[in-house]
Image 1 (tube, rainbow, N blue to C red):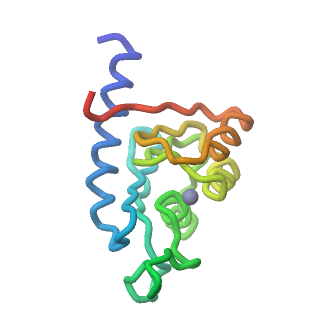
Image 2 (cartoon, protein in one colour):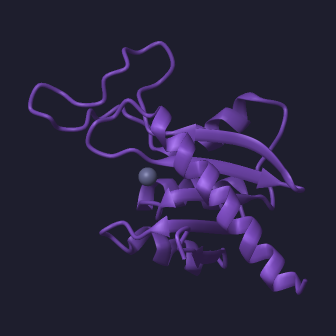
Length: 143
Ligand SMILES: [Zn+2]
């Protein structure tokens, strides 16, 4: 099998896993899942939610997302920060394209490739990643 085709298949499978992982999120408005793969190993995972030790409720009484909810990408990256590993040259798989705040973390963590399924309404995160020479790929997991 050609190398590109093989990568495409792998990308699709990791994204499907990230999509399943998103179901762990107790956020009602939106559920996002992320995986970090380095040297052909999944080194981290994340979904959007409140920080460790906080109650598992993402929305306030007005159904607005609480300010301290971490995005899936931020949870996956900070989980690596707590471990002995690092994200240098890793690939991030995420079900929805990263926002600008997560994109800053992705750049600083040394991640070199971002693969996502759904386009987030704002493009500024993706544009920032591209400016930092990070490969950004959109993959349709149902295609
Ligand atoms: Zn984000």
